[in-house]
Amino acid sequence: MKKLILLGFLYFSSPIIAQDDLLCIGKYWTEDEANLEMKKFTKEWHDKASWEKRAAKIKEGIISGMKLDKMPNIQGDFNPIIRNTREMDGYILENVAIESFPGFFITGNIYRPIESKKKYAAILSPHGHMADKRFKTDVQSRSATLARMGAIVFSYDMIGYAESKQVTHRMPIALLLQTWNSRRVLEYLLTRPDVDANRIGMTGASGGGTQTFILTAIDDRIKVSVPVVQVSAHFFGGCVCESGMPIHKSKDYQTNNVEIAALSAPRPLLLISNGKDWTRNTPRIEYPYIQSVYALYNAEHKVENVHLPAEKHDYGYNKRAAAYMFLAYHLKLNVSKVNVVNTIQEDFVKILPEDDLRVFTKENPRPSNAIMGDGAIIKYLGLD
View (cartoon, rainbow, N blue to C red):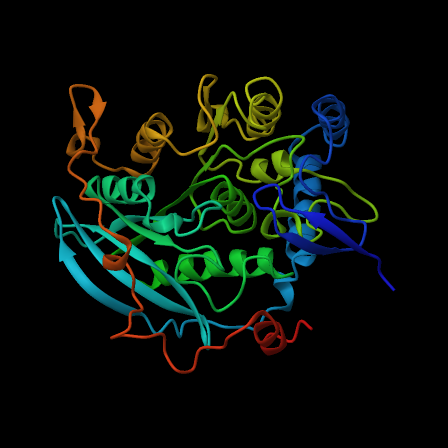
């Protein structure tokens, strides 16, 4: 019988239950230990062929570790609910829900350009650990600005937050459900006739950064990736949705989030880091390792790091400005729509109250087929 270990959130005070000794949780290594481990990882490969052998093992470990290969074979059937379409200043805003699987809904907002074109870039926008984060100013500003630049942006809830209340956030398969939801958002966007499948980006901060680099690692349809304040050699994510399932370690191998982020190669990747959290060493430890992977593909110019040593753990304006420029370059967006005197302007964005952004309301409630509760979802998926 596997031992149960009682753990604490780094983001929350609530306890979580983790299973077995293969989990790498929170600050699993010290910074000194991580430095040495990264040197060991370097010895595991020496050319493109040996890296790709290791990369395949890491990718398989992510998929099997989170039981993604145990999920039902669901294609299409998104049954989108789109409400309250509004024309804003340079973008269109909609309240949206799609079915992740029958009876389980992904809730969010779509921000899209006003201009009439046949195809647009699309950007997945997951968020980090904060109640009702999708409704906050930084998420609204980021999504609207990218839409005005020419992208269709889907900003969607973490499970257990905002409108995603069919389960709790600390359920044991949170990592699986969030990754599955992100993949379903991607697949929904790819079904839209106005989306260019060759211009798909993804960006989020903190826990949203984790979602970004994990989905990019296992799904080549993400063409440009910007994980913010989260890729760390020593910190593995302090929430069950990041490290509550064994994706970093098995009985015969060990990896970390740096190598998972490196699976983006040779697709464009921007790491945004700061001086006041676990990304403080990015210019010295994480970024050089990922650069060495990109060099195997002669793609050093496609990976960048913007390090802000005086800033903290957030997706603040300076971080957003760096992301805008990187995404604009690689997704062929129009920076001139928001660039005034060499500064990215966000003052055109109208920040709406959360009630205006909800897809499910008293008048338009969640559909009656909704499956409610952690246990009910786990049982439906056959993962109990």
